[in-house]
Amino acid sequence: MASGNFRTCPTTGFKIHIPAQTLIQTNAVTAIVFLLVGGILGLGMVLTRWQAVHLLNDEWFYRLLTLHGIAMLVAWIIFFEMAVLYFASAIVLSSRLAAPWAGWLQYVLMLGGAALTAVQILLGNADVMFTSYVPLQANHLYYLGIILFAVGAIVGCIVFFATLVVAKTEGTYKGSLPLVTFGAAAAAIIAIATLSHGAIVFIPTWLWAAGIIPMMDAEVYRLLFWGFGHSSQQINVCAMVSVWYLLGTLTVGAKPMNEKVCRTAFVFYILFINIASEHHLLTDPGLSAAHKTWNTGYFMHLAVLASMIHAFSIPGCIEVALRKKGYTRGAFEWLKKAPWGNPGFSALALSLFGFGFLGGITGVVYGTEQVNIIAHNNLRIPGHFHATVVAGTTLAFMGITYYVLPLIFRREVAFPGLAKLQPYIFGIAMYVVSVSMMFAGGFGVSRRSWDMNGVDGPFQVNFGPIVDMALAIMGIAGVVACIGGAMYCIIAVATLLIGKKIEA
Amino acid sequence: MSHNPDHAPKGSFIIIMIFFVCFVLFYLLNWKYLTDVWIVG
Image (cartoon, rainbow over all chains, first blue to last red; front, top):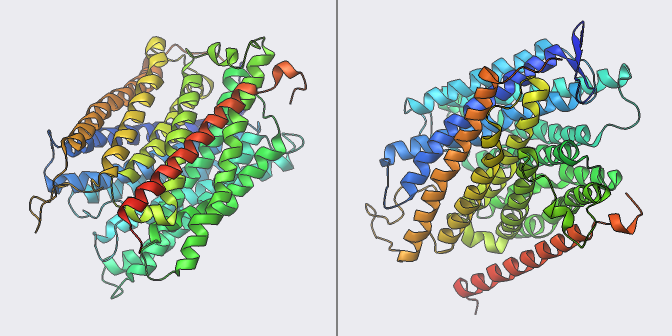
């Protein structure tokens, strides 16, 4: 049912603001395009790190690794988060979106920035990898692209907060913000701090690359860069946890067991999660040893406490919801009878397990100062963050897409049989990729390196056959994960093009 | 939260305890590994 600039969703009863819907659609589709690009590049990465294949030459490996990092860690995730922010504000609160023109400004800046950066990388003007550590220097347009992207994302966050004000002023909801919106607000607060770091660090670096200022201090760069580079992944954590709560509600009708505790956990994220960024600076001279130990050995665990609260709260509220449906036998009947054929639920469960057991445990241990010293520059760390960002966040975002397609795009999901399988293929393959990377890293296999044996170096490093086996397993699982990612893209595109229309 | 004992999240509590044990074991394993490569004294 449509009225003026709004329509009413027949399934959820949400009043949907049409300009907000269009912006959600545009950001989500763009995100999926970047996921597709990043996934194809990821295939190149695993087929090169798999020593028996070693697909790309060194030049193209580092070039495409740079683009893989930007496309996946920045573009895919943050475009999708913009869609999540607009959904969690305008749609969940049945409000109009404040200043849709600013939403379009966000989109144009982010797309223009991402495209500019990507073109510079492909032209070979920015073989500096994701971290672009000074004094490595890219063409100044590479940095300008990232600045435009960061400013665009900040504009998106401002539109989100302005929409919360509009919703409160116009009385579209009563009482406190829903938990999903509260979590999205926490993500947006972290995003503003994070993206401001990005803009602040890349502006002088851009001027330095353009020849306007004579030097860029390497230590200052690293300090500020990690306020952007790692903290951008903390936006993901917050947005992903919000999506988990939303999926719990949509799939089994779960309600938080204790909203106050969950909200407190989100506040802990805002206060403490960025401290985890410091593990990138453990060998840097600018910070004292005591400072490093306190941050990575103690304060960081307050953010871990928040994750522990969600780790119990989310399966707990799903269990309570399923027990209320009558699945009360023993400790695990609810788990056996859970809707495992619903791709939204299976994506939620696999994402929760992958993020918590594989990404969370390893992240806390590897992030501690003493262990980090021997883990940071080998494949254990990419193994950890492929569990968090890919098996965790990406899979959760894939799961919510199966609800966004009918609710926002008003199309029935195409190929439902394929959709049931997709989270399993992608999720389990990513588990194997992550574990095999961490296993090989435990033997000292370096990260970000085309040549792990040092063939052209002053001395050679030889690894045992078990390392080759681990890298082969990583390569095979990586190919399977790419197939799972391609299935997701095919389902999403087919739904948009040939999916049966849902009248509303 | 429901006060019906049949609705208490017992299964989730067990899963979280398994998670906690995995956490402790992985922590210990890494510190043991650290002592092997970083010998003091």
